[in-house]
Amino acid sequence: MNVSLYARHSRKARVAAALLSLATLAACGGQPAGTGSAPTTSFTENGVTVTLSISDWRPPRATLTALFTPEEKGFHLYSTDLPATGIEGVGRPTAMDVTGVLRAAGKLKAASDVLTISVPGVEAPVPVYPDGPVTTTLPISLDGNGDATVLLGYASCSSEKGCTIPVSDRPVHLRVTEEGPAFVGH
Image (cartoon, rainbow, N blue to C red; front, side, top):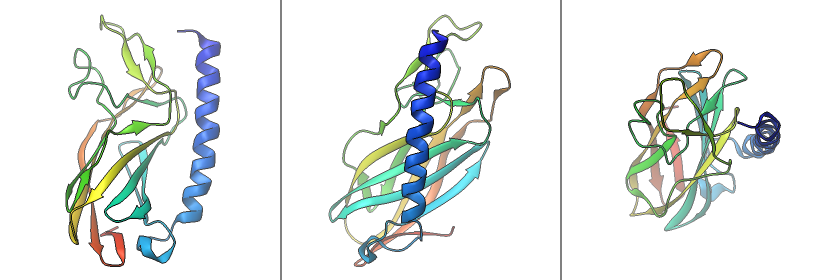
């Protein structure tokens, strides 16, 4: 891989993530969307902090955003397009889905460019995002008021420090009312 190209993409990703983090912090509060501030929650598991927020709430449509931030420098996440079992067993896709009264209204998209890396013992190239945070967005639609769950999956790796344990179908719960969505239990 071209190191200078990789460094440029990595720097762009860090700058974009920093700007998004500032915007996310400004929108924090866990309040329903109808109050003017996007509902937000976060958790840290297996070396990655995930910050979820809902924006553009215009029932029956909205956007679900997840910012995946590795805790240590030098770690990357895998592409959303990676097969569920990885490439020759290596890696797990960055994934987000919804159940309950919310449903996906489009495809999960990442704001980062995809790079391919060579992994010893794996013949095919492995698609990853540059080291550092990755922001994904998923258009969602509302089927009424009630409970919903966001299911998240990811794995982070470093070429020098190895990989963290993959996370699969990690649930985050929401409640949708006339006032809008709110994360619960966090």
